[in-house]
Image (cartoon, rainbow, N blue to C red; front, top):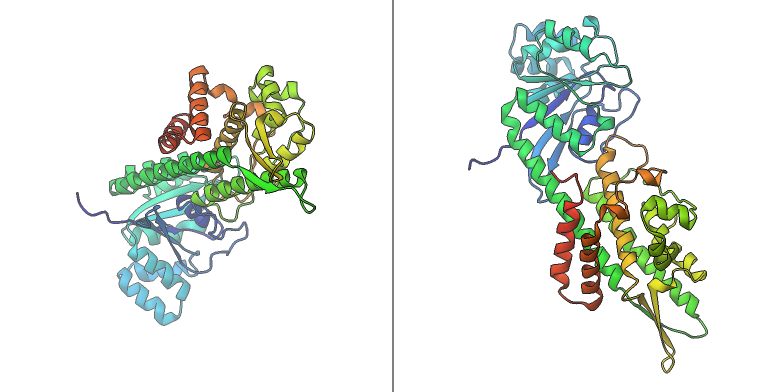
Length: 435
């Protein structure tokens, strides 16, 4: 097998046409600076798309707009790209020099235009002619800033100018599937990119596998966690119980943070939404039967606390236990001789805690993968629970039996490694995004 050569791709175009946004999506990194204001990118920035093993899969050049496209075109018509760069250096056109140097280093050029604007030769003519003269694999990316777009008009306009390779890509509506489609479209015009497409798929699946490794591990930690404390003048039973809840909450927050960073969300805000739902209505929407809800108690509400902040596992348990509704899921063991108390999940009814933790985190992971890194709006979960993909009814009777088997394995500390692996594999099959 020949050694993989990571392609270099330069994004060219007017300021504020979405070059940085597209690169943010393709690299799965929300730390790349983007703005609705023109001129956010003032120099050529180089970004490497790396897999989880730190292998470079592709290099992307994010460029500002040309400052002197007419002069560049006039000189480039009679001279080589190398000589043109030298000429511009002598003139002191540093920004234009950096763009041409990025073009020189690249295997593919992506010319990004706002396809909601009107095609205009006076606006884009010199840039298009420059790209034709450098004789590189060039693809035009139509990025509509608003609707309706003028994609068909742009395709006709570009065709007349000799640019036949045109694709559509909206970075603000681009999750995992749109990235895959982007590489597939590019492959039609530049077959060598098939290696990049293959590596992207492998990297995505590697991250997805890791996600469910993390979920399975954290589910195990929550299910088996025990908190033991001594009752004295400083700490009452209620206070010790609260410490138990706080530790459960910390474990969940760790999981969410790990999942966010695994998928390249370092700065995007994540907002929780809390629903005050009556038992009957909630059971209907989330999929728990009334019988299940009685056993589970108000803990069923755990499934709606999906994102950071808001009502967490700890605060929810604390509130519901105060009313004695969820007590069936939590076991409290008191040692009168040592004056200590231990809190842990009940060996039978605690299964529903595990089930709701799984559902919530599958919904959270789905939200991460479909948000898009160029979309800097907060990540939210639908207020309409009926629209959620991950409810109790995604599991049939035999699948619930399997999950109960996993729960018992965890509680009894029996075949733990095998059970975690089986849980991960099972949840992957229930997650339709696997590619």
